[in-house]
Each structure stands twice: as C-alpha cells, then as structure tokens.
Image 1 (cartoon, rainbow, N blue to C red):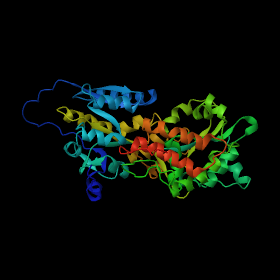
Image 2: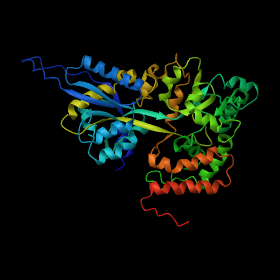
Image 3: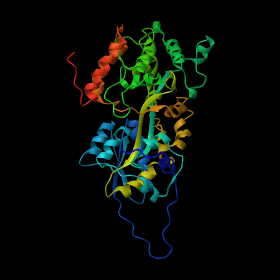
Image 4: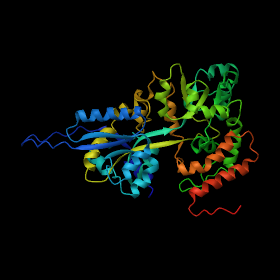
Length: 440
C-alpha cells in the first residue's frame, strides 16, 4: 500500500465529529416525497457488554432517523466478522475492523474510501482523532476507515495487595504519578511486595505468548520481529532482545513472585486476579466491566513498565463502509456513529478506549466515580502503542509457544542464546515462505 504523505494527512485526515446542521428544504415549491426506509446492517464484534452498547447506539439512531434503518449484527470475535465481510453474501454495510486486516480489505476491494463521503456530509476537519490512528487507517492518500478504538495493553493491579504508600514508607521504589508511568525496578518492587507466599498470593504472571512478552522486549531495546512490516522470523536471538529478556526473566521466572505450574493449570491469570490470588495482570480496557463486577475487588491500572523506552502493544479498530451502491446511505450512519454523543454511549460501557480525543478525555470514558481511578493511563499508553505484524497469528503462536513456555516455566534455562535461537527458527517455518530447515 502506498504510504500517505504526512502533510496530506495532517491537513485532511484529522476527521472531527462536529456535524453541521442539516440544511432545510427550499421555502417554495412542494415538499419532496419521503423516501421509503431501507435497512442497513452494522457489523460489530465483542463481548455481550460491548455488543449491548453498540445496540444502544443503533437504537438511538433508528429513533431519530428519517432515512434508512440500521440493524445490528454481531460476532464474538473479529475473525467471525471478517469472514462475513470477505464472504460472498451478507456483508455488513458498515463494520468494525481491526487495523491488522486493512491491507486485505483494500486488496479485495471491500471498503470505500471516505474523504469525499465525509466532505459531502459537512464533517469538518480538525485535531479530534488520535494522529497515529489516522495514519494507521490511511492509504493511497485517502482515509480507508475512520479510527474508532485504540486499545493499549496496561497493568491491572490489586490496590489492597500493592499499596504504594506502604511501599514508600518502607523506602521501596514507587512511581510518583500513574500517568507518568514507572520503571521496571518500580514494577519489580511492586510485584515482590504484592506476593504473599504464605497466603497463596502471587505477585505477577506473564503468559508465554508473543503478546504478553513483547512490551518488555521492545521497551528494553529489542525487537519482536526481524522486520517491522514483513517479518520472516521473530528476533529474540538478536543482541538487544536477548539483553532485554535476560533483564526481565529474573523477575518473570522468580518462583517467589509467580504462581506455580499447578496453580496456572487450574486457573487462568484473570481468574487468579479476580480471586485475589494474583497482585498484577496484563490486559486491555475490555477487562474493566468484568473486574468491576467482582465483589470486594479493588483495582487500578498502570502503564506497562519501562526498561528504557515506554512501549506497549495492542490494537486499533476502525469503522469501514462497504463498497457498493449502498455506500451513500451507509456513510450517513457512519457520520452518526462517530459523533461524540454516539461514541460516548459506547464508551460508557467501560470497554472502549475511543480514538476520538474529545470522548477519550471526557467523563464518559474516564468515569471518575468508577474503577479504575487512573483510567487516563489508557490514554497516555496510546502514545507508546506499537502495532506489530502477525502478533495474533494462530500458526505462529503454535510454533513459538513451546519455546516461550520453556523460557518462562522451566526451573532452569541452560542456554538463553540457544533457546532464543530455537524460537526464532520455529517462527521462520511459519513466516518465511522460502524457508528450508537445515538438516541439523
């Protein structure tokens, strides 16, 4: 895909959501006929809480709209929605799409570029959207989908188990301000403080996945893949990555901090956290509603720890319009869906980190009366978000998981250089079409 020029995007892609009032009809002459109402479909994916929030927004649109009616269709995961979008029938007119699928959508001619559609509807330009999200959903000097959600990975922590004031009283290193982040040393101190082995409470558990390990590698100066755009293997055996891993594994493998193998086999990290048996977990904003529902669980959030550079992983989602003769009507609903009030309806469910800055900074998202108290951490973490290719490829995960499990779970790592080399070699069989394994 051709990369858009920064000047073009800054001038024309910062799509705002201040809608001009609809123009009234002419004063003279007969009233135009009222067109028959047709039905558009809006495709989304997510948890029941998320889908219910989208339905509320659709209901509000249908209650006020004079034109097409919108029907919500939903899937549990992005894969289901994308199968429908790329299929031959029943493609939603407007749909939610992960940034990772944009290239495929464009290559198959599924989406409609949005510049002209938005301009025709008096959608003003401004600095309303996260700039990186605008760039991410832009190609061929046009906006392909409107940025909608930006989801960075953060640290959720139990505030009863990790009390920064008590840590400070013991002269332990603690962060000064959640929005400014924390160092790896402060993070490690918190993990060790939160662990209560005699009570069966662990401080931290990092799952053996590329997604959970990636922030530490990147922040420590390493790289997850050998190429940021078209990788042919993971890059854990590179000097920078090995150094970052050696630094972090001292904590992530510490049996005084982490759950036992038996505990992990019985319960997930999320279940242990909900039970008060784990002081910290890594996760996204989508965890918030389920954690709020746990009686007696007090929690807050912090950015991913910094080993030098602030870094996290995550995803972006956009709202796209399907190509075809229904694009004009679909664009009318799209404009409604990205208005502040509409995005706020969805944000109040507690799962969405809005790409629209005005909503992300509003009480609809920050929810000061609810947990987590430091919800602004999600917003500041967006600036550290690194979009990685192939991060959620099931075949790649299957190839590298044995090595990652050995890295995090085995009692002793005999040779980290050899282990990281094996992980990279296993990944190459999936990522490199020209790969031929050596006889050894």
